[in-house]
Image 1 (cartoon, helix red, strand yellow):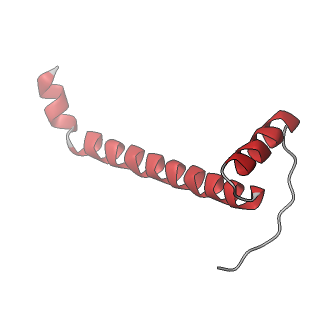
Image 2: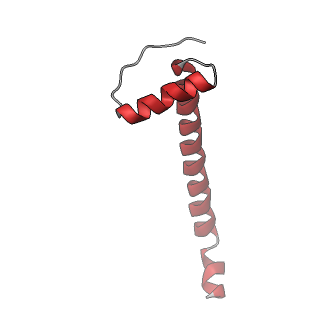
Length: 69
């Protein structure tokens, strides 16, 4: 896997928690941060897809919804 170097600013308390987690799990900060970013992106994408399916379903079943009111 190709990696890139990034630079960012984070709250010091969050950074300390991240370092502690890395130490506790015997992984590098980079590994923990990469995993966290992957999970965040996956969770956001699933949410967007789910919301789109919900909107599509509501639009497709609008008449049925009116009948059930």
